[in-house]
Image (cartoon, rainbow, N blue to C red; front, side, top):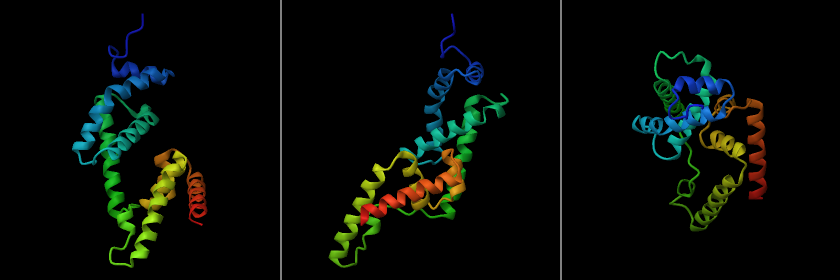
Length: 182
């Protein structure tokens, strides 16, 4: 009778995942996601979606590079090292490229003409709603490029695609946005 996920060691789960057992990967995520999220949050990752994104990216990188895990530390420690490095990379990107918010309050000029405020508020609301309708990859590429100012090569690496594909997704998102605003 096979051992349950809870009774199996991380090492045996890693080996099983390498042999194609998707349930082993699911068990590793179940076992380590919450502690990783707590660690990243305490390390300054912010709340909510930022932490979830970092946890997801940490597992993606770990599973892509599982062959580099040598067992010198625990799997959890290795994950936390990857997550910590991703967090540091995120801080570096933010310090080099200030974040541009798509929030209405940031688009509307408080001192401007009331008519301009209404128009800007309407455009901001339409853009916000538009972004939510984009397919996930287009939305992620659009936000990383337009809001965060991330280069295509970096977007490709983060989303597991190519720089060319990221450009195409961004182009399609911009094309759809222009059509919406016309």
